[in-house]
Length: 209
Length: 209
Image: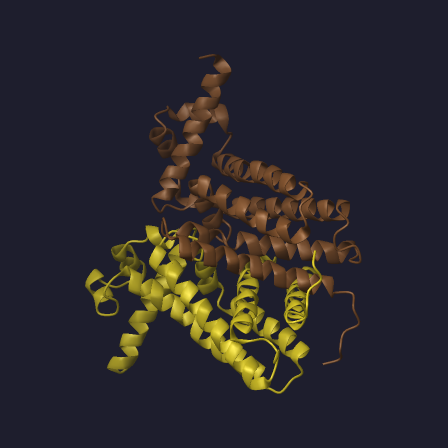
């Protein structure tokens, strides 16, 4: 194994060890640098070869969740599918990705409202990236043409937080419960349809009530 | 002080001590019964006079958050205000209540996606109560009359999770930042308007796109 490969491996050992400790119910804020190194089978000094401090490890975990998922969702929006199918296929991509990265998303779901402000802020920033990319893609695809930039941004922020909010439900679903799973995805699709329908009528004159 | 008053006091000491420990960045799952009793200035045995176990203390905290807020929101809906004003006044009531019960809602925000399944489930159940009460009140007020029961329930669930999702933003707002605060409440009101507008058009025939 070359030097770069060894380096990547020990970095992955550290992030995996942190995820494993959190998977056992610990919050990110309660983790110590030494115990992460120990759980990874590395010396404490090895930690500093990869991260200047603990927060940076948390931020790396947030990045890892976001980067691939953003690419997958952009690809889904660029397939040329009709809009309602983009919505459903994006929801399914999201569900599968969350399941395949279970430990990462348990971290995201619990730190999103949780203890460490720097991590919470990073997750929020990442959500902002998702919303902005979605808005760009919708412009490019000519969807919701009559919304101005601010209103389109509002729609995308609301969509992103509605989807993110479903993470815990996805993770809590018992294995092999196909009926519950279908209902859960249907619920999310219907929520998003209601939001998009509101956006489609956003520019109409409103009844005064 | 009578016996009942003393009993209520030591119960409050225990819940407050738990909230304080969590306010310092600890997750609920990481708390021990003995340390909560110690932080409350009580003997460990005193804990069992109030709660059979730690989970029950967590469930009591969830109840404390929900009960008063539900009453306040029902009152807001029954004032006879026009619907758009009900929406804005409910948002303001919610914000003030979250702020006045800061420690409780830090607990809710972080445990909602966090470590202890029994607490997470209780929070979700409480959110279900909110949504059902909202649906009942809307029926009674004759709002969104053309939605059937399932669709009205969908609208109310989506509304409740959109509002709950704003808790972290409310808690993270720097003190005395009136501009940021106005923007934040405006964002939430606009999100809810988009959802309600979608609900109002839910039963219309949809364009095939």
